[in-house]
Image (cartoon, rainbow, N blue to C red; front, side):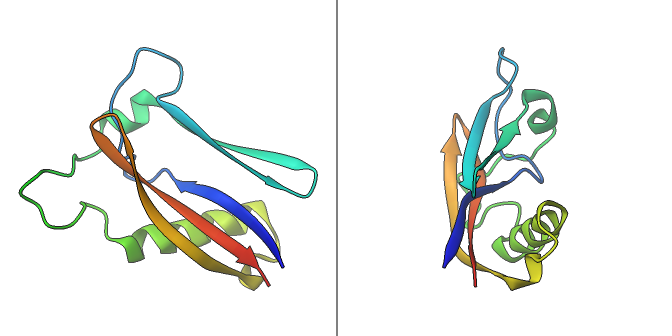
Length: 105
């Protein structure tokens, strides 16, 4: 079974503004190719924070997954054969991003 890890969802960019080119970059390998998923400060500056008084993040996990599946389809023509393996919230500075891992069946 093949696996691509760290397909990071950049929608609603749950991260803060930084002074560098990227706030952070997540990378994954599939076959002989490396895939980078940069999170830019500009894109993320518009994102809503996950406030302490909110029980859930501003972007529901199912919405994040649906968006990640759509993006996966732009990377691989057989994306329908890939299944989600893990969804993780990752803190980046004072914000959060989803990291979504897929397994190829």
